[in-house]
Image (cartoon, rainbow, N blue to C red; front, side, top):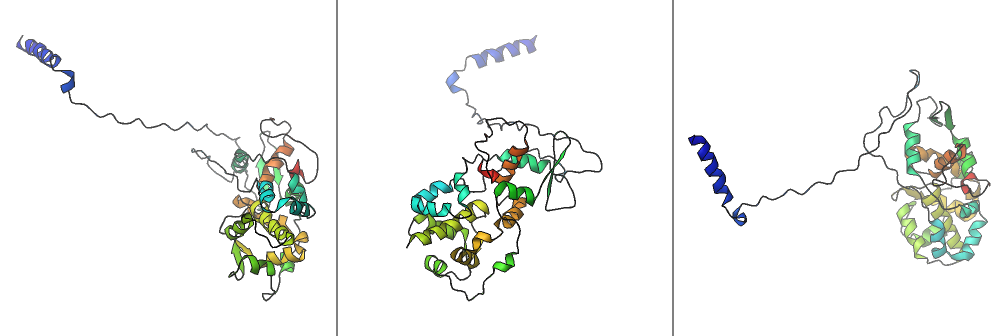
Length: 284
């Protein structure tokens, strides 16, 4: 009996305590829960075939846009319409008519997850959902981009003593090369001595922000300035260089998007819409 009475008295005593005198317990802030990543699955393979990526990552994989999608807008601000017309007459002129680039990083992710092991490192083998193996090599890259993909790059080298006025004028103090960041800065400042300088700088800017899409600290040799100056850049195999960068997710990775759009039998218009039927295919 005493145990029961004592228990009732305890309850009463706690009831009479004013609410304000009760010790306040600090509430721990609720942690935001991360959104659940949808499970990624891929078709099983025969034992004789293996995926390059052995295990599908459990965390979200995102691919940013590695190339410059607004080069035309920057051209309009930095070189003006007269020089844009001159640019249109170069081998890169057709790129001015590219519809709005709708780069889909998810496509790059899926292609890499479906890449198959095989002996030729210069060709990408992709396992399609219906079992067919799709192949993307330099031939497909040339068709998509319209870039020259054959040639000996060593034939375009210059003696070290060859002077280059464009290089010396806009990059005083530089010796053999400049970084991409150093190229971008003067280009966007719009301070040209003449239209020819503006055109040549626009060609180099387009090459290194769109076609090659290198990192900011990558090196641009004086050799490329000399090629642009004397016009030999028009027959240089830029496609060969850009293609080799695809496997590091640099270069013109948008070509992989366009290639996927081309072989897709049905394509959701929310992803991409084909506006034209021209060559290079990237301009559609």
